[in-house]
Amino acid sequence: MNCPHTAAAPADRSAGTVVIDPMVQDLDGETARLRDAGVLARIDLLGVPAWTVTRHAEARQLLLDPRLVKDIDAWGLWQSGVVTRAWPLIGMIDAGRSMFTVDGAEHRRLRTKTSQALTPRRLEAIRPEIEKFTQELLDALDAAQGDDGVVDLKAVFAQPLPMRVVGMLMGVDESQHAILTRQYKAFFSMLTPQDERLALLAELDVFYTDLVREKTARPTDDLTSALILAEEGGEPLTEEEVVGNLKAMVAAGHETTIGLVLNAVRALLSHPDQLRKVLAGEVGWDAVIEETLRWDTPTTHLLMRFATEDITVGDEVIRKGEGLVVSYRAIGRDIEQHGADADAFDITRPTRNRHMTFGHGPHICPGAALSRVEAGIALPALFTRFPGLRLAVPDEEITKLPVMTQNDMAAFPVLLG
Ligand code: STR
Image (cartoon, rainbow, N blue to C red; front, side, top):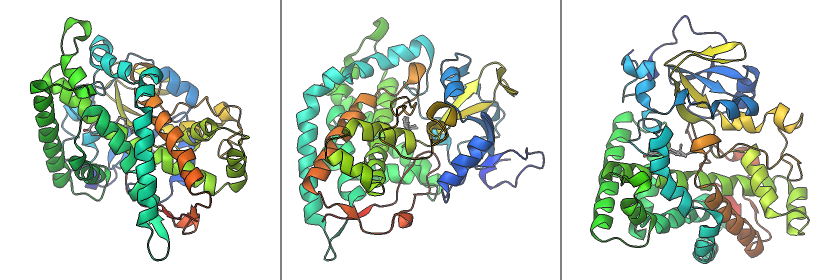
């Protein structure tokens, strides 16, 4: 199978396999099928088989299990050459050496500086700047209304805000933001031919390597410079490691927060009774943010971890060398964890804070606090400025982008009111 994503389904494929749809035509249906397929479900990712964990409790356990590692060299299908760089999802796994791809003591060495820079206390210092970006983008929204009053909240507000924030943190010049946004869009889209995706990943590598060299020569007060100067565990990070961390942070910081902000706006606009409670101050914005994270996770599936030994989960065994995905959307809808109404959006739900959308264990999202600060500024500012905000099309007409791992809307047309 040189080209697994176009290969026909192997005859021995288990009937219980859920084929993940690259076009994301029915996300809720697929999430329900995953849940029904079991605690541990077999999935097909463009012809490549893997396991996924669909329940909160078991995911929590597996995310603490040192027998699961991120190192692609532990993957049997990679060792045997069945999966190659021709597979469209390879960039989600084979992303260079960084805190995203390394485990154990080395992982701590790669990650410490970043997590220290992103604590709630440290983030207070950049709150004024995030507020300023937000106000500027609200002005841009106002100015971008077409003759019909319609404006795309994604393109004009939700997408540029996290890019500016992560750009400021990492020292990425504003002139690059639109280019990066375009490149990441193409990276994540399953409509991008794989040779183009590999070419743009190579371009991104050159861009980030140049940035790291520039900051090595002339350090500033951004996190990229701090990573270059860091001596975690006595051993400074190599250029490759700094580049890897920088790539991971820009990609993650920019992509996931877009989803959080847009999904929250969408949930509120389609649940006007709940929006009223928030605007009346009866329920806090933090509740909106946590319930959105649970109910409509920015990350649908997190690729991938590999078993270094056989691991038993209930009746199933993840064999040594097999891959495990974590399906955060299904986990957020876990009935055991959130009750029989887990599929309902409810900002007053008692378990709204007990989601696992930022992961768990050593790799838990280092940007979690940052995304909460961003959404906590953006959402109230948006509804304060435009209290009559509403969708410009019926909710069913909002379409998802063809992105397998992220929960990404194509556009979010609104009327500002
Ligand atoms: C994108 C490509 C790249 O150059 C580096 C990374 C590493 C971090 C990854 C990122 C990826 C894709 C989106 C991820 C992010 C970490 C968090 C984010 C998976 C592979 C999430 O969706 C949670």
